[in-house]
Image (tube, rainbow, N blue to C red; front, side, top):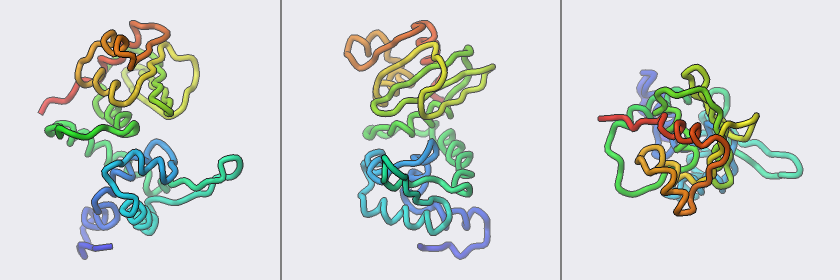
Amino acid sequence: MRSYDDPCGVARALDAVGERWALLVVRELLLGPKRFRDLSRSLPGMSQNVLSQRLRELEGSGVVRRRRLGPPASTSVYELTEHGAELEAVVLALARWGSRRPVPPAGELSVDALVLALRTTFRDGPDCRVELRLGDDTFTARIDSGEFSIWRDASGQPDAVLATDARTLRSLVFLGVPPAEAERAGSLSVSGDRAVAERFLRCFPRPSA
């Protein structure tokens, strides 16, 4: 790995996570462990060779570790170490800063990137619990006294359930596409309290420059 050979804390941090793609790998692991193939699928612009190299570097820096799952999974996953998990605040701050910059004309948000975008753009909303089913991933989102939290997996009794995909949810939340339009297109299914679902989708205003 290249080094800035600079004792400044910023430079030392960039020695560990400043290589291209490194922080995006961290982003994809903030919500929990992933297999190599799942990481690769979430970062389609990154070759598998580069992903392997970045994972080795992040392991060497103590940011990521590889763990073997027992039966019935019997596979390896990558996860953030305690040291790596401390980057969450850094990644979220970068996401808030970057959200005010122009959006590139191409490219899609991964599921985890979209979930982080919800965290960084939430402003306010009524108390509720909403289940988001995004393909193979399920998340529970909760608004409690103006505080927003979201985590992978279903839990509790949601007020509403939104079954869709990352592209459609992004269009509903950030582009103002009406839910009824997505339902007619067959890309969205709403169950439970529809009013709660529609209020929830309006809780994430796109930041102005």
